[in-house]
Image 1 (cartoon, helix red, strand yellow):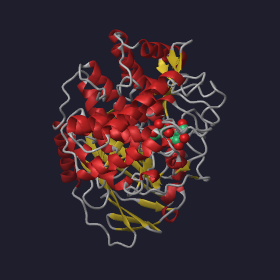
Image 2 (spheres, helix red, strand yellow):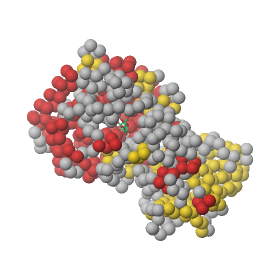
Image 3 (cartoon, protein in one colour):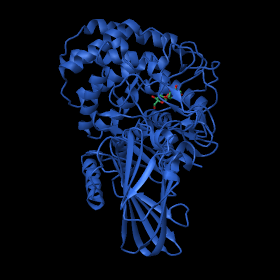
Image 4 (tube, protein in one colour):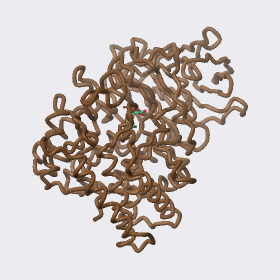
Amino acid sequence: MPADIEDYALLGDLHTAALVSRDGSVDWLCLPRFDSPACFAALLHDETAGRWLLAPADGGPSTARRYRGDSLVLESEWRTADGVVRVIDFMPPRTGAPHLVRLVEGVSGRVTVRTDLRLRFDYGHIVPWVSRTGEELSAVAGPDAVWLRTPVRLRVHGRGAAVHGEFAVEAGQCVPFVLTRTASHLPRPSPVDPGAALADTVRFWTDWIRDCRYRGRWPQAVHRALITLKALTYAPTGGVVAAATTSLPEQPGGPRNWDYRYCWLRDSAFTLQALLGTGHVGEARAWREWLLRAVAGDPANLQIMYALDGTRRIPETTLGWLPGYRGAVPVRVGNAAADQFQLDVWGEVLDCLHLARETGMTPTETAWDLQCALLEYLEGHWDEPDNSLWEVRGPRRQFVHSKAMAWAGLDRAVHAVRAHGLPGPAARWAALRDRIHDEVCSRGFDTRRNTFTQFYGSRGLDAALLLLPRVGFLPWSDPRIRGTVDAVRRELCEDGFLLRYRPRADGNVDGLPGEEGAFLACTFWLADALHCTGRTEEAEELFEHLLELRSDLGLLSEEYDTRARRQAGNTPQAFSMVGLVNTARLLSGAPTGTGAS
Ligand SMILES: OC[C@H]1O[C@H](O[C@H]2O[C@H](CO)[C@@H](O)[C@H](O)[C@H]2O)[C@H](O)[C@@H](O)[C@@H]1O
């Protein structure tokens, strides 16, 4: 059975990610990219779908684990009756073929260590053909080849169904394992020096975090969140994935299981705000370039998400042979939300590019041309119902947050012309902006309940309404905003944490069966709202509660199951880590709003 979600540590090389359980088992690894088929998919089944265990022969969870400083090098330690042993796991930032390096270090005594390697290509589907030559083992099937180098004598069972090894490690000894993936038609990869790779990997992360300009409170939590966001970035293109996994359920055993290994414009725009706000301008620049390439073409064809390289077609299919994380089916790859109309995305992108301008990133002609094309589309389509930022699969509605983001997009464009001298019909954009504002305030506000509503005329509320003042739609002091904050808090809180919305408030608004947990990003937005409406003590208390939900390694998934008191949904999720960074910044005195006018 897979471990609890918060038990998984993240490793990554800026192309892909691996998840390692507290038991020392790599239960998730997609090679060569985040969105490639997994060769270890025990996360969505059990060891028969592929995993790599490396731990004391007696088994059990590590007694201590941590990342080495501000890096993505994991150190897991087992204190056993025979002594102490440490496993150091990392993926060197990619320069050629991907490597997963595991070093077994004897700390004291003499401990027997066991390894059990089960490679299954194509998400647990294919058992490769495994052969051994000296210290090298190769596993080949179809397009994939995986190589394992280690001085440990390994036994191959059932032509490769499992590879076992057992060895003793004494204080001061270090036993390396290096797993490398190549395309199967390529020659064997050249060997890696594990010690040098370790030093390089630690240096890479330490150098990266050195550029961080965050000087506020909770520095360790913020650094870990930033490192995680960086790890979710696909270095070759600058695209940012929403999370490292697919189909971790939003409800135990439930069907709300989605593939997050793609680049959402919304999630990336939020991520970029957090990175820009902490001085990581290089990532913002790379993302802008990624964006320009990904969305190039007719703005009518803009998608709300793309694959890592900007590929548009990511059809949603289910993997019938995987029984899912603790029985939560279906397991999905691809995401049908890619074809949805989510109006907010136009606003998110314009808002993010506005922020980049305000932060001093030089505007490029292409970037402004893209923004003009987006605005033209917005002018023609802002009044259509959409699927909203929550990607509802029920009927399209006139979502209030979507309209407010259309307002924000136009507002940023007006500012770009008036304050930065960029060319454009500012008066026309300003007139439409004001018209949208009037419409939202009259049709999206319930005077009786003194709150904005989820969509025009709806009974339900929406945590995304907390973002309206953040983008400058109305000030925090406006009684309508204060009323909305109170109503959202009253109606959407579960055990102190916020739901996105109540799926049954207006029938079945999202068109999906099942329930879901509290949405962590939304709960960070609530902490922001409390602070911005003068309730800083409550905001800090809520933020501290949120910090307590993090794993021992500082990671957050998408949601929190308030009944089981466990993390839920895909992990680690950029949205949640961004929420942490932005709230910490706000509570430390940094402005995090994006409003222009
Ligand atoms: O709840 C239904 C939808 O859930 C996913 O979307 C959520 O995650 C996205 C990525 O983090 C985020 O951008 C979005 O706002 C969230 O609602 C899923 O990807 C959708 O397919 C699904 O309909």
